Image (cartoon, rainbow, N blue to C red; front, side):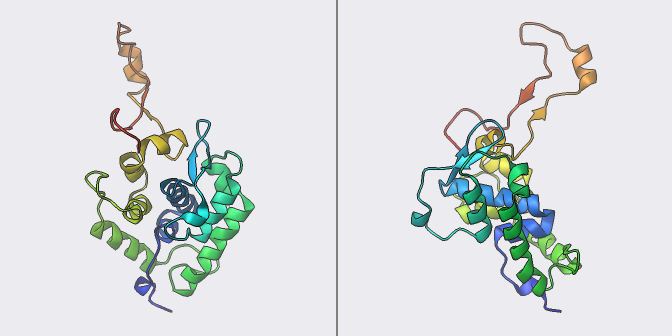
Length: 201
């Protein structure tokens, strides 16, 4: 078996090994957004942006390309993960990872070496303190390794609008039952982790 830890992994591959196909597609969606190739549409959906894919600084991964092709009409993350072409792109991603000893046959779950490698990457690349000064690849790596926490820090408005992160409910039912219903609205609504009112993601 090849020692897969010697393979240089892209963020979407790291996400696949760490958390599975949904995480890999999430990284692909964020990649497209950072390139200007995807933008928020109706709540919980994303659509293709207006930028020209050919003019991108670096080629998008085959997975990101498959996701972009599906965004001719708005789609949510669940729809993207189930799309046949996106599923094919994920399946094709698995082949070199399996050949490198990072996925087990026949179910293609992450091997012990792969899980150890992802844990080591998380230790070596902790969640950034803030989003300033990061390259796009550093943002994608953070999303691949830290999931929702990175999405809320690095692309909060976009992630919330397109449904990559859940809205956080303030308090629980018990809190609502005992809260006052004064001029401030009686509590218990939703808040977004959008990081204040300044600027875009």
